[in-house]
Image (cartoon, rainbow, N blue to C red):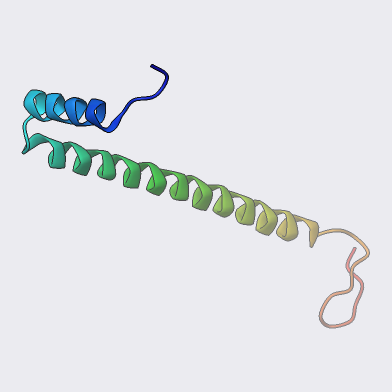
Length: 80
């Protein structure tokens, strides 16, 4: 009683085919595949957006930190 035999699985498969029809199952699996692809693309887009946000923050931090006093300019003179 604990496990299902091959005959149980065959009966389950026949019932599924009768309920859904042979044509609907491939379409259903295609829809599932499209959903998985869209989910993965969304995760990749989130990672890209997070990476762009971090690089923009680093760029803005380096731009603002370059205006500190006591730094040497390109011509050798001290600024501020």
